Length: 206
Image 1: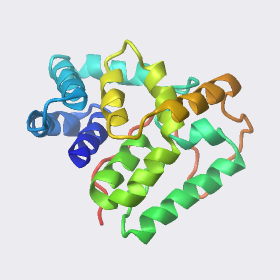
Image 2: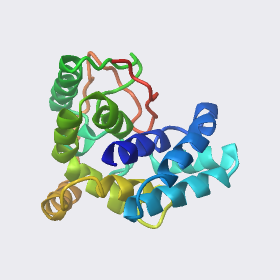
Image 3: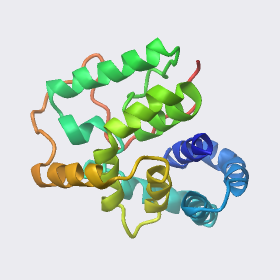
């Protein structure tokens, strides 16, 4: 069940382009087969929302939601490492984990994008993917809190339903929110500077 939830969430957290539209009916069908529960309700609600919006409206909502503002980044190392040299090392480590599992990324993707991590957990290596999600759970909780009241909050609620009880993660999220991400502005070689709200292209090859 968690695999389906995470794969669906990964697809729904990508930029709503034509590929998003093409796969939305498949996502809705997969979600409809989930057992009743919070995750199914949340994903069903977001799919209905997405289906009822124009491409222009949904694209605008995505850009407004996932921007460079504090607590709204989809790139998970931003919460722990900001734009520092340490973040470059964290990205490299995640990429090493993927490589050890035979999971390859598109050259344009950063490995810490939430959609990428979710797909890896669903289709790549469940155990290593779970570890990554738990490792970044405080950032996920911070993002979830920042999205409260908006349509994308439902997707984060579904993701949270696949993770351990978030009490400790929420305490760490509160600490991260108070401190903010480190602000040292350096390059992320060998990854380059990629805007934090840019979507991943789901469909990594194993």
